Image (cartoon, rainbow, N blue to C red; front, side):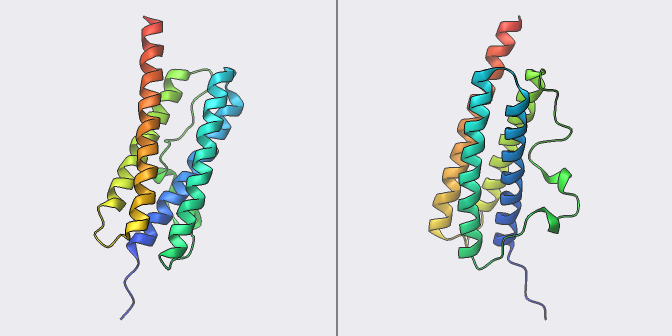
Length: 153
């Protein structure tokens, strides 16, 4: 009988793949946006995603799995946290909507993994920190969007 797949490792790899993609999206957006403060903030978020991806790789290895990214997924674009296509750089409202959507997807994926009973305490602590980071980012992006909406009224 075939050994049952390690769903925890699969979920970690899914989150890793999405984290790396999200980091790439943040960097791409930071290169295309002209507003310097926004550019810097997106680069800051991308640096956090890089650190998170390194931690996720460590968790995959510690859980006895192998690091796998999007090569193993069939319809990866449908699974990315950031919906495609990416918005035009001058359309800040759409950019913020996509980033808000991405953070909500990240929180949902972290919740799903944190719900697993067999998750090691050390892994749970790391994943909780990543989820809290996503929640803080969500609050930030929603605040910026509200400020933008008030400005355009």
